[in-house]
Image 1 (tube, helix red, strand yellow):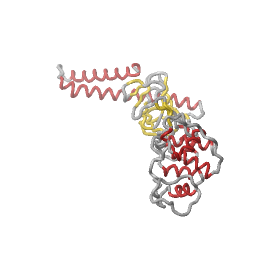
Image 2: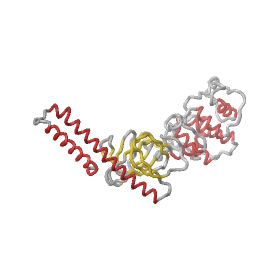
Image 3: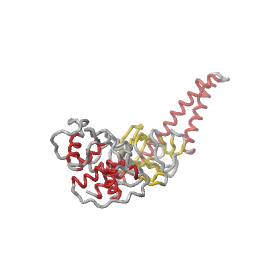
Image 4: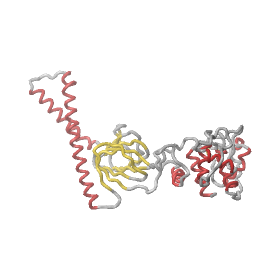
Length: 361
């Protein structure tokens, strides 16, 4: 890092001397503090920045020439490029960018990791970035002298600005469009599975919202889709499910097949969170009532510390789900729990549905 900054320091020094010489030649043998603060130092900084920019541009040009030559004699899936500004660009899962000395990059959204064998400066934090570190959103990085840095995209998509030369290598052929689902996340594989098979979409074009609670309408829509979205006639038998709603056919299908039921008083509660015990009951009913599958024996739940919180109507379904590996317990301070009353997150739902599809369907 010190060797990389030394030329810039020299440039600033020479610029300062030049301005000082100019002031002395004008007959100002005794320079005032006001002159130093208002004229001398600003001029020195301006000249220094201008010279520094020229040096960095030369570094960029030299690196680009080397990369162009390498790309011309190489081949494969890598391509050499150059960017004048830190323009926001979208990269995809598994793509790698190799950046030479003088290039810089700005992480905006998504997940990516950095590797290098020299010095990369986190300009925003004012410190060196460790090789193997995960890039921090809204931080700008600068590749130091005698260093080649590699940035690898770890999420379905990532927004990253690059200034200077870089070589791009291809990533995965298939990937999700989600910025918030990365390879280091425990739910990466289940979400990818659910997305590729059309079980799930995001809450918008680029976000999955893995920690958001799943609601009852969402789960019914997923199961309806899994069944092939058969055509429906009539209206759902619930006051809170108007026929025009996007989930109306799913609720009508689910209740007619015995997969789901209401919550009482003529209500379905479509926007209410679907609990873990409600989820396993719907999956159990889907397999036993809709698919008419013989149901294997369940697991012994006596070892779970909160089994007393499990509703009676969900005991058989939960025992079956645990026995089939669809649900696993959570370790809460050495105490294994089922957490049956807690709302299931979208990431948890993707995990349970993946296991259900692979082991039951």
